[in-house]
Length: 114
Length: 114
Image (cartoon, rainbow over all chains, first blue to last red; front, side, top):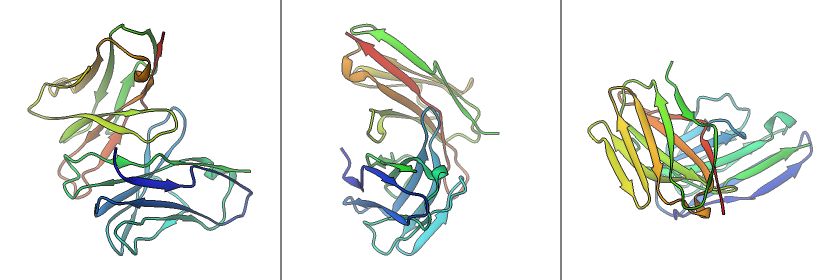
C-alpha cells in the first residue's frame, strides 16, 4: 500500500471551531489532492497542489484552505466549521505523469460538525 | 457534459460466484480509465488502468474490459471472496487539459455473502 497518512481518522467538533486535517506522504510525490466524499456520491476535488508553494482550488466550491510548505505535507484547514462541512475528506498524491499514474489515497478523515 | 455512470448501484452475490460491474462514460477526449476498489473506512486503491488501445486487462481475479467506441467498460470478478466486499469506482481521465482532469463514478457497492 501507498505511504500516505491522514490524521485524525475521525473528528467530531462543534460549529464555529477551527480545524486542520493533516495529510503526509513519504513517496516524494509533487502532486497532492484533497477530495470530499459523501455516501453514495462521487469524489469531488476541492484542492490540489503541483508542488511546494503551489495550491489551486478544485471543482467543488469549498470554504477550506490548504498550504504546501513542504513536499510531503498538505494540510487542509477550516477556519469556522459548519454542519454542512460534515463529510469524508480524502487526501491523495500521484507521480508527475498524472494521466497514467494512479492516485494513492490516504484512509480519510471522517468529519462531523455538530 | 462529461459524466461517468456505474451500474448496478449495489450488488449482493454469494461467495464463489462471478459478477460483472458496468461503467459507461461520456468523457471526451479520452485518455484512460481506471478501476479502484474502496474498502469500508479506507481510501480507494487502484486495480487496473486501461488506455485507448487496450480492450482487456487482468489483475488476479479482476478483469477489466474497455470498448472505446461505445464508451463502456466492465469489471469482472471471478470466484468472489468475502474480501471482495467493497465499493468499486470507475474513474475516467481526459486528455488535452493541463490538469488531466479525472471524472469519478459513484461506485458499485458489492457485498459478498458466505
